[in-house]
Image (cartoon, rainbow, N blue to C red; front, side, top):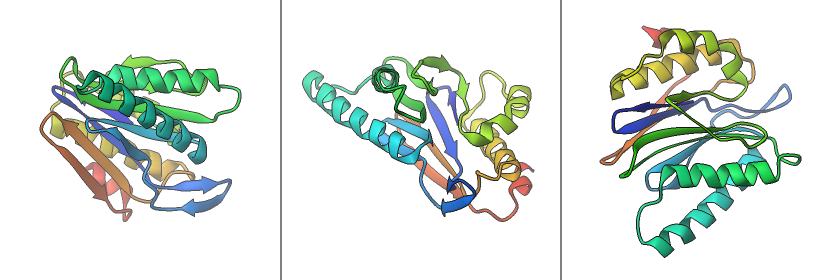
Length: 196
């Protein structure tokens, strides 16, 4: 999931990768960098989302070299959308693109299965998201600070992990703005104790 705050974004995800009922990797990193200030949250087929992100990185590096400036977050999200839409019959890839640019500040875009593109104040995806729509709708508020966004994301992911068998491991948070990129990892222990 990802949420905008004034001047940046907070991205978060669990770390469990499963194949059916088998947990293939309990500490995978589902939040990946695309450019200096643009990151993506991946859900769906791990290989499909990795391939999409690799193509976007490739195209975006050429784009930024040609323009000699930082890329727009919307440009990155639009590249994701194009690849997902043009290959919608072959991909199982749900992506969230979050980042900061000097033109529009912090932004969050969702590219769900099928390849549409929606800008939102927050976005959730993956198997655990179906368990927390009510929680997220009830606790999200406009104009949250960076610390409030971190607590909101951590609480939401903790609830998803406690209810969804395909979610688990650790909670990873990435917070980025024009001045910093910071990663936090919260261990498994008791998910719901994180809500206090």
